[in-house]
Length: 298
Image (cartoon, rainbow, N blue to C red; front, side, top):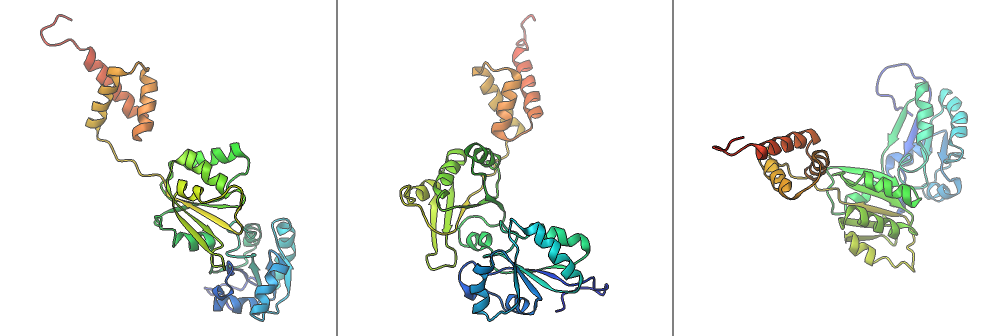
């Protein structure tokens, strides 16, 4: 199985990171089927789950387990085989290994040995759902599964509040409603899309503001199946000119009793400009206000 792109000496076998269907078996690529058939061994997240896929394509390659709880131990067994010029294919239960699935630890363990690691691209729920979510696709941030503890989840969402990229979350169907509620409480009622069971028989997309999606999730009837929630990023604030900033500061000084430092911090956050710029402008405005009018004795 040839996979090298240069003429350097062959250091051993190749670890192929193979994407598999999310649900619909017809989404398997020709190359992925060939790689799985030609590999010496397949490392699968769940050997029983993968049997259906392998049987469908008459793939008889031996399979071993490689999941999040034994990935480090599996790497210790697989690296010697790779060094013996054995090609190994890594697959997860669905989609691309390493994307909120096992794979990262194995890949990071293999690379220092100079063993080629080659992607066999295909399905990925993040990208599949994003392509039809109806939200901006020029930039997106994959947040994966957020922490389950409410306080930690709140902190994670707050850290994303000013992120302009479309946000992508994985969540359990039992908790997706509470996640949507927390996102709305912190981020506001942003445009969103809830994707469920992508490529499967009960594939569903609910598009609209977060409030619309929440209203369609019955708290007494939890969803079933894999869920991905897409939320529009923060709007990029319009830039404010120095003249407009000065005018707004003068108006605020006329009614505000805040200290210069507090007012500078507030307006810097509000208009997304540097605190120093605001502080210097406040000092200038206060100085102008305190100057005596022409003809008056200071």
